[in-house]
Every structure is written in C-alpha cells, then in structure tokens.
Length: 294
Image (cartoon, rainbow, N blue to C red; front, side, top):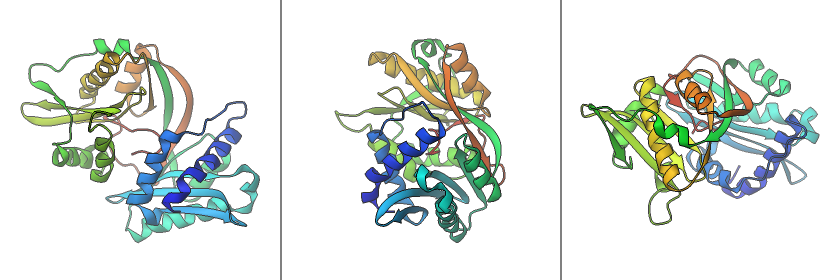
C-alpha cells in the first residue's frame, strides 16, 4: 500500500462497514486520511492493498510499537469476501510483525462473526469491548480540577520524553511518532486540536488530546482517576469554542472513563471488540483514540 492509495481505500472501508451494519450509512471520512497516511509513513512494511484487475478491493494497515503489533485497519470489499483476500492481507501484515520480533498481536474487530473468526484463527482472542459513544460536553466541565499537588500543562509538545516513559508503562511501548502526528495538528493559528498535561509534585502524571470536532483522545494517566481532570481540561477547551457535543471510543476495561461518560448522559452508538494474543498495557488508565489505537 502506498500513500497514493489512502483516498481509494477509504471507499473500501465505507463499503465494508456498511455491509457489517445494514441500514447504517458510513460517510467517506476525509478526516481519517491523515491517520491512514501516518501509518503508511511510519510502518510501510505493515501496509498492504489487494487488487483484482487493477482495482483495489481490500487493504490492511498494521503498526509495531516496541514489541506490540497492532492491526489498525483491515477491510475488504464485500463482494470478494469468499476469495480469501482478508486472510492474505492479514498474513502479509502479521509477517511484518514477525519480522520486527513482535511479542503481542492485537486488533480491534468489528461485530462481524467472520472477522472475529479470522482473528481468532490467527491467535487473537477478545479481552474487552470498545463502545463508540457521544454526548454533551458541558457535564465534563464539572469533573474534578487538578488538586493542590497537581497542575495543568497547556501544550504537551515539550514533554515528549516523559510522555514516552508514560506510554511505556500504560500502553507497553513508546509512541513518539504518533505524538508527533497529534502535536503537529495544534501548531499555528489554524490549529484544530490541543494537548494537555498533568503533573503531580513535579512528576508527569498524564496527557490528553482533543480536536475541535469534539473528539477526545488519546488520554493516558499514571492513575485511573487522573484521567478525570484531563477530561475536564479537554471539555473546557471545547466549551470555550462553542462545541456542545463530543465523541469517544471507550473500552470496557476503563471503568473510570465509562462511568464519567454515562454520568454525563452519553449514549452508546456501536461497539467493537479488542482481541489480542496476550494481555498488554493498562487500559484502565489508557483511553485510546479508537479502533486505530493511535
């Protein structure tokens, strides 16, 4: 898969998702293109496209961070499911992980029984559910503020080393290249996102990102409850910009974030499943960006 394939495969993704959930329309999402392009740039060996007669009918994108391999995307045009395209794409993507000596193989799967069967046949099994949720921002502005021993940091761009150390603890590997992508998006007068950090007695306690479209993620914290003041910072930033509603992908492994969303009146739109060959990370204090896990 090449960078020039990114726009094309977005339509394969749309067709595959709509096949999984009949009656629900998925838009072609231009905002996803930078994330897909980022994966092509950081992990070209994990990105594959399938063609039949020169027509792209499927693609896979996998990242490797430390010894963790994660399949960020695998979608196949519904009309060619019976041809084994998905299995071959998965094999190519997993070979990339094996070449990088990955210990963990993981994926966020749709609700499709065929998809889950494919991943389980390849050694990945469910450990949690991810809920796509949305709701009002304002209730989050009343969450706990940083206490006397904690303080807010606006713009995390100068804290890469401490963020990398925190990621190694809560995700299981450093993710410097992914932070560079997020941080680039809130530099300059046309910034569309922001980052926040939290310190306790001078030690880095957590970070959070938020986008002006209402998307809040990722968030990582040393302690589960440290996610709440970070969530409040994001909500206040959105509230100041007259953004009334937000969205997050919250895993069942993170009761702190799930409880905050439900208490705020957020609703579940759909769900997916986190599968892995073995446990990794601390998802009770790590709130991913979604199925891409960036």
